[in-house]
Every structure is written in C-alpha cells, then in structure tokens.
Image (cartoon, rainbow, N blue to C red):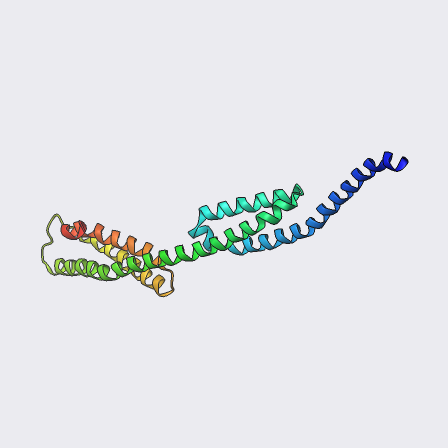
Length: 200
C-alpha cells in the first residue's frame, strides 16, 4: 500500500529528472551550432558585404541576434533548428555580394570605356581652340582665355589622375576624376565660344 501511495510523487520526480537531463543533453549541441553559425556569419560580414549588400547584412545580423537570444534563454531546440537557416543566409549573402560586385565592376568598366573614348576628344577640341586663339592678334572681347586655360589645366590634371587610378585598378576613383575632368572641360568651353562642346 505504501508503494502505491508514494508512486505518483516518485513518477513526477523521475519525469523532472528526465526533463533536466534532456535539456542538458541539448545544451552542448546548441552551443556548438551557435558557434558554427556565428563563424559563418562573421566570415560573410566583410567590407564588401557592407558595400554591395547592406540590406542583407542588416537582416543577417538580426537573425544572428535572435539566435543568440534564444541560446541565452536556454531555448536550445530553437537554436539547433534555427542555426542551419542562419548559416544558409550567411552563405547566400556571400553569393549576393559576389554577384553585385561583378555587376558593379562591369558597370564601372563600361563607363570608363565611354570616358576613355570621349575625354581625349573633348580635351583635344579645347586645346585646339585655345591654340587657335593664341595665334590671333586680337582675341574677341567675349573670349576669356585666362579662365579657359585655368579650367583646361585642371581638366588635364584630373584626367591624368583618372588614368593613373584606372591603372592601379581603382575603378571608382578613376570614374570620379573623369567626371570632374569632363566638368572642367565643359566649363572652359563657353570661355572660348565652344558652345556646342559645353552642351554635350
């Protein structure tokens, strides 16, 4: 009779012990899963990722934070289940960055090709016009040679910087200097009555 009286209590205790044991058994796998996932995320969070996929970076960081919160709350099953999804998101981020970086490189190369073709012609036109005006005995009143020379000198320097940056593989810097050079050429054109050039 005593055995049957106390058996429910012992049963409850046994279940509690089993539950604790089950939780303890999942703690180590959860910790291991979190570490593996954190390593994968850290590997994906590169400077290129910030540049080429900022939204995806923010989303991935948020997912990792949720996983860490689950681990801190000792929700080990959620950590073990969610770790694979976060790791997959990290690998997907790496792929997105690669695609976006390649797309951007192609765009920069295309723009550089256009500048490489147009800038020598623009500079040559302004140089030729200034040389022509320099040979004249009387420069027209509506011509500002000194201003045009100054603008052209800056354009030459900027275009030289652009080509140097391109040779170093700094495509974005090369394009930035190219655009500045073109702006200077276009600013010089009206000073020597090259209105057609300035309108390009």
